[in-house]
Length: 213
Image (tube, rainbow, N blue to C red; front, side):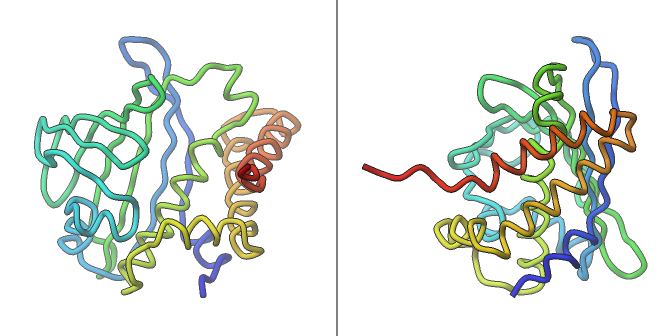
């Protein structure tokens, strides 16, 4: 059983911006403290066998300048690596390139995971769906990592998909969307615009899958 409220509350969410060569980019940050060591957390987020247990199967060359491919999702190149403290990589999906950076640190006998996702997002897309379009997915990843560190068995994709359509899963997605709404308002977005975007993105995530012919 997943304690939805506890997991949602355990994550810190922030929004910001960064100026890159190609122009202004949006920065979405998430972090959570896990009851393990930095070394174990590093192993969990960089070893293919363990990544598959809480996130999704990954293939490729997981070392500096190597290419990786997440099954059915993003690919990229590892641009920086400083074990067991941090790594950075491109995040290539849907013909777009963005960037992720993961940082690990000790936190009062436990280990903190921090992720920054930097992307050029059009004003139109941001206005339509807001940060939840990316943030809800990362919230689900941090939940998977929490379950893995706590000793849960490997994620089954079909069971995971079924869970997101359960009452508990919909509550998680809805509460995640609400927290990203709050972060969006905190970053200066008009509350009415942020609310409309949050409602749209939660509706997209909780919509039932199309029926198969």
